[in-house]
Length: 219
Image (cartoon, rainbow, N blue to C red):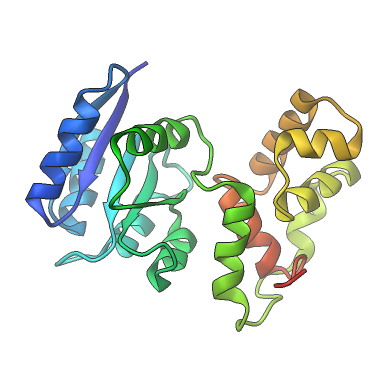
């Protein structure tokens, strides 16, 4: 299956370079390009790409607002934020808006292609522990309990255990080892949790854990 990508950046030279890299991959095609957030929204709705590589700072509509419009509950398109700095304040806002991860603009060709494949498969781009460190960086001075813990009522006792481990940065293999279950069983639990809580991926699972106070910065 070919992964269709929309490239969104206000610098035409950058778009051209990324387009050339991705077009050279046998399993990736460039569905289109956009120079600002407004174009990104209209192009995405017309082209229905699998993955959008989205710059943050753009004219007319920034990448955060565009991401928010394109990652609703009915959307299957996944957004990867393109940024110059890995701990940019806007990155966390973009994750809150629905992005599945971020990628530094100086990433090489292999990193770029791998990022597209990972996100297209439904995984978050960031490794669990990197995700947690990133989120802690921005929530350490914010109040917890922003969302009610009643959101977890739909989970079974076992699923609550698994969710706690997801929130602490464990991979499926590590969850399996800790709970003495097969990795595939852990993966099935994770999938059901994501569905029940309407979460797009692990990034948003970790964010939910902090928002509800289930996990607190530094723990």
